[in-house]
Image (cartoon, helix red, strand yellow):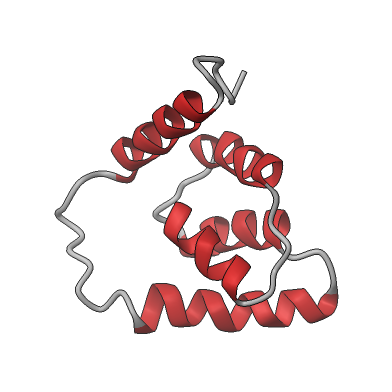
Length: 100
C-alpha cells in the first residue's frame, strides 16, 4: 500500500497520510480479493476530482496489472501486509495506534 501511495503521489495525486489511514480502516471490511471493491476503496480515498479519478484509473491499471506481473497469489496474505503497514504507521506516530 505504501508503495502504491508513493506512486500515486509521484503521479501528482494529493494523498494525505490521513487519507491512507482512512483507507486502511476500510479495507478489513471489504473483500479485498474482489478487485472492484478494492479498487473502489482506493479510488474513493485517493482521487478527489474527475481529473484525479482518470489519473488514478491509469495509475491503478499500471501498478496492479502491468508492473505486478510477478505477483504470486500464494505469497503472504494481504492481511499480514496490512499489519506491517499498521505497525510502521504506529512507529511513526510514536507508539499511538493510528487506526484507533
